[in-house]
Image (cartoon, rainbow, N blue to C red; front, side, top):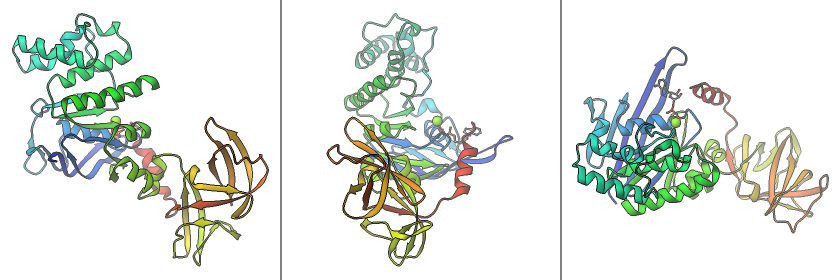
Length: 369
Ligand code: ADP
Ligand code: MG
């Protein structure tokens, strides 16, 4: 597969009175292949939109280069910036970017009119784009007469009408209700199959990122944390941040001593671990998922059920390990009562260094805008 989007050492700093200098995007390196659907996932303020805006050409670069196909479109050193309209991209942003005073046909035709495409061709391409986004027959309707989902389809139709090689989608479904979001996810994938464009899909919703993408990355405070397939990131997160951002996590403060793990402040009982325990003595974070802890009546770490909750497909228990609690999800057939004594074993946990409180403060600082 050929490379469609390449970012080399892309960095962007902003300086404002309120926040001082923020490195919104720091040394970002990425290669997205032609035809890939690639998701950017991360909390608000981590730099997703800024990265997308640099790819689109709305933002210059403090450092680095961007290639689209084999064309150099941004280069901080050579001061090369190809303007957005010459990058042949389709774009859809979070806020419904439709023009209220134009009917649907004119909304979708707009980018072609700007390019001075002949009238007959505009008609043909707009009709096709409306067809593929299930908006047939609504040419003369105004956006205000349509539902939120239909309005977002207008934005999609306007993006595909230019036959882009690349689609940049910035939280395109955030304003839709959950059911519609799921439908639109399928629509986007279907359109991608039909037209073969490459997608970058920005979201802060992990389920959405995992459902839609072939590969994805997780960002934190301007830094790419990890790049991989959804299952690689879920099953082998490289740090606590990525672990916490995908799926449900339990983090337990532990002390490692001579190859055994103890709840911090409770050296009387070892935690039963099936899997590796770090060799080095000292404090660590033990990371588990609710479905990787076994609960039984015979052996393991002895504790007690604090709370039991019936969920549709499983039972959830809240159980103490030292001063922390963990959530455990098990099938209905293995029932414990609240308050009952039990034993737990953790399977193949991940281990991370203790909390970084400075990082937490910095995350908050960035989340102001
Ligand atoms: P995300 O899309 O992940 O929520 P953004 O890319 O919008 O994050 O923002 C990343 C950081 O850059 C934030 O700290 C934000 O405050 C800052 N930022 C973004 N755009 C500007 C701007 N035009 N001026 C100053 N700071 C900005
Ligand atoms: Mg954003």
